[in-house]
Length: 386
Ligand SMILES: *Cc1c(COP(=O)(O)O)cnc(C)c1O
Image (cartoon, rainbow, N blue to C red):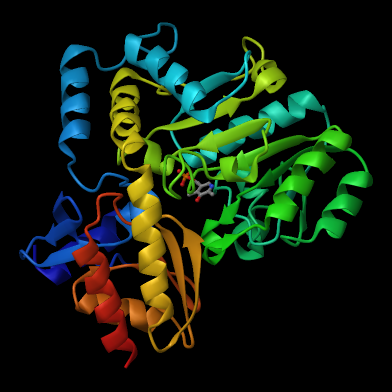
């Protein structure tokens, strides 16, 4: 379709919440996507940290197609082998203690909604604490934990009754929890939408100790950092703590919409029969997709860590880059100037990134990205900034 046609048709049919899309894409393979005119793009955003194995990965395509052709959807009045296999696999990968349980959902927001209900069941009428800069989703409960006032204010009052403390400020967290009534603290160990800001070891450890001391749940939102994105299956494991709840989505389905909630130990039984539910959660094709991703990612974790480390090192040397943050293949490249025009120039040069905050580009590509593709970005950024 010509540019004006698809843009006009989009504007006249799709709710105007995302602005005008930059491209209309028709095909993807590996780290590449194509538009209808055959223009090729190197996709370094991966559908916002979703396409962990790139586009059209044969293992995901085969798993989903075979499952759809065998048993597609059955509702949660029934279960299926892939649903149970995935729940077992997720608990194993999380290293969750005896008694832990998983629940399968459809998105990151829904995973956080579930965690919110678990928290309210843990402390009825309790309030939530989240961090300044946090992003936990756009549905009403998850939105109440999301920092940006412009996202929240039009929809007040918020259901989650949340207060926000500055990240990495242990004293502020301590006084907030000590003031009482907190049902849960929600954190991302690397704040994704804020611009790829990792929390300090000290803060994450204090978050565990303080929530435990004050009887609040520690919920770790791994929607963006989980499923191997940082070089570990779950990013929080390197802090040496055990949370009460972990939420997952984005990368775990490799492009198929699927999410999960893991309740660790006692937190696994906070919701009793009839207190929660969904229609699609963990249906056979979604579970099959996530099982295929988990199988493939297991062998890629070392590579994700290595490629990411080398890439960040190279990016630090690019003139105009003032900071490079992140772990594994979740990378924030902070520039000495506004990032939106740089993102646009890179797109014109055939490279997809996003401007995650006014001065930071985000990279969240396929775990199978080649060294050559990483180098191509480093060279393109160098020339665009010059
Ligand atoms: C994207 C994201 C969400 C929301 O996930 P959706 O699938 O868009 O609902 C929640 N938390 C974090 C950390 C995210 O990055």
